[in-house]
Structure formats: C-alpha cells, structure tokens
Image 1 (cartoon, rainbow, N blue to C red):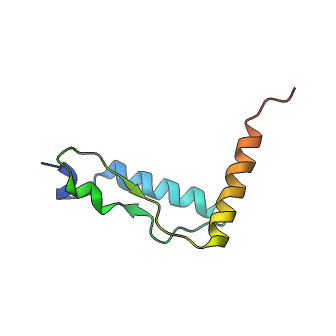
Image 2: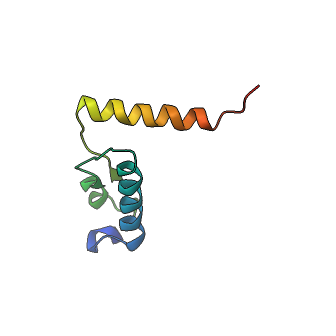
Length: 77
C-alpha cells in the first residue's frame, strides 16, 4: 500500500515549501503547488509534485528566471 495515502511525509512538505519559497523569491507564485492526487493511487510510494496551472504571465516569468539561471551556469569561452 502507498505510504503516502496515510499522510504526507515531512520530506515532501519540505520540498514543496522550498520550491514555493524559491519561486516567490523571483516573484512567481504557483497557487496549485502541492502533492499530485495521482500520488495516492499507486501501489508504490512515488510522490509526484503538482506544479499546477498558471497563467501566461506566470509561465513567461518562470521561463525568464530559468533562462537567466541557465546563463549563469555557462562557462564563458
């Protein structure tokens, strides 16, 4: 039986909180951020994090943050 069906683990809650905090630091809020209900349907404890739906402005802001972060990781040459 899926252990997640009996409640969320502390690690999952911490992961969701950490992601939410990191997104908010860049002015991005995903209102549906949480555990995907499909998590509770399986027989294996395989937690899925639902990022949820967002509007076009939020998607563009998220893409801009990811592009900027990818650019920071590139070696110049």
